[in-house]
Length: 452
Image (cartoon, rainbow, N blue to C red; front, side):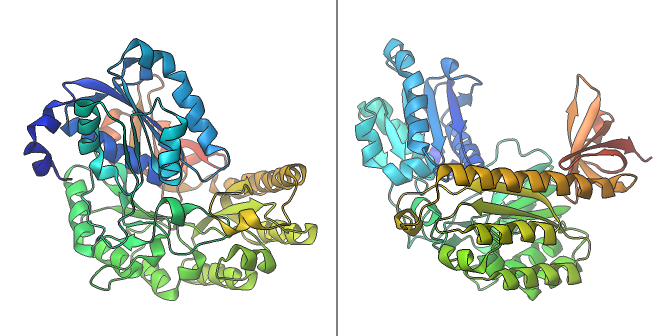
């Protein structure tokens, strides 16, 4: 819902009356972005954000179901608010996000304390839902997917700062056997090209210098006019004033030469950091995961990336203990981690998710074996990542300054390689890109001195 529409409904714009809202967010950047969108909509209703639930008259739990026991987490958090609601009958509590989409009516039945349950495709109905709950004093459940509706939204960010996220797709059509996203986010839809160009330029006009394009599978983007992800990157680089472009998450099966050619051509704007989830180093496991590529095909993509972008920096996702994973197949994952110089990884032990095929596989791995394998992966990466970090010592990196710390007198920002870098400087540097000589280099955090 756009601002103009909200302003035409007095009950919505007045209903918050300056009251506080507390949003508790779990999960990925998509959830973070959804929380920002909800807060923007709520501010239009005259709510304001508060730092603690005790100060709120409206509490929203924006849930994530990508890992195990997400419903338990929601139950636990709502339970902590029970006494607050008993003491304040006007307090309204709702659950949004993937758990809301996944559990729907069951969540409301199991937790009568809830006033509303809002699915991932219904975020823009939040103003109407709050109004209905407040005016009718009746619970609301809205978790229907709108598969046929075009993905037309306006980017809503209250204080975007120097760097921010922009949704370009939602949902996923891949149906990996371990992943619940197609069931909690729906089928894949892409935003129109012109909408994205307009939104990014508006953000630039508000002082944004860097955007991260966001989606479950960004490089399968296809606009209504037929422009693909490579074309989107090219047009953002050429037709907007944005200084830096990043994106996450990409899928190896959709990574192609056209995309790499665009990245190589526009290295002045498109950052060389690439998150390329592999999940497993075993072709047999990848086939059971329904990933759409083999180990050799993945390594071929990595080789293509480095051939066109020699300074590329890679990160990845790893799942250990997938059903049926043998010790030999796990060791193939370990060997892949030695073969590809990932500067960062996100590693997890497999956990069964509702609606997914893998939860029904009969050859589940014991928790003890999964824990052992995860520990081995993390130990190996710790060793290699520290070695890779040393290459930055003595280098001069281009840092886009994002924050100033009053206590330390230091500023921080990120390099093109997605490293957080801290150095002495003033608040006036925020939004500027400066050169920093690296004097201390850890895998994710670096410190240095500005080169003037």
